[in-house]
Image: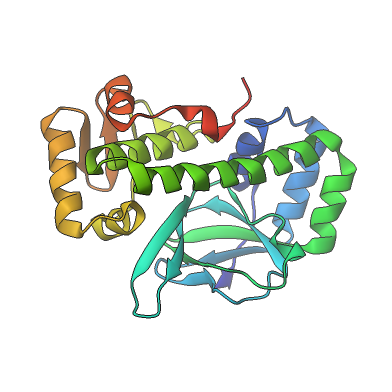
Length: 246
């Protein structure tokens, strides 16, 4: 991990994401930016930011890059339980626990901010609307986990994959990372298989079905959704669980 210099541009996804839950006043946005700039780090793809069993002594906020939150069984099998995207606050209140119960690995180069507990709690105390936005984000993260449980437990393979693609697309929207009907998609087929509980072969076959139906194009680490409404129907996707403010 290496230190890098923070900029206002880097903090934009964070402000945008929090604003999706509650209006963020100008003074609160300035306080967030100052806090995020205090300690900015960079990690290359393929590195663990946290490991199961670590003490959660800091709050990490993703300024850019993608990560996977995962659990590993004793025999080495991995289950990805969530993707962490630009603007996300990683486990904002985990410092209330003694140990972390999962690991988190970078899928791309990631630039992130580390915030000490005291600075984070000062932010919470400084503005009630900002505090509500951070609590809403934590509650939305829990709702995403519930939806993932439904995805693996009840949806068929094509529904699972379609649902996950819709979720990623809709989570990138409020942070300004869509380009029309396309977005960056640095997730490998192995990652997708580990996230959906499918074998790589089954996952590949499912992606081919979605392509053949004219719903998606996956090329050069870019996802293009040709018909978002049709993909949502295929995945039985209802975005209410993301809990963005109306």
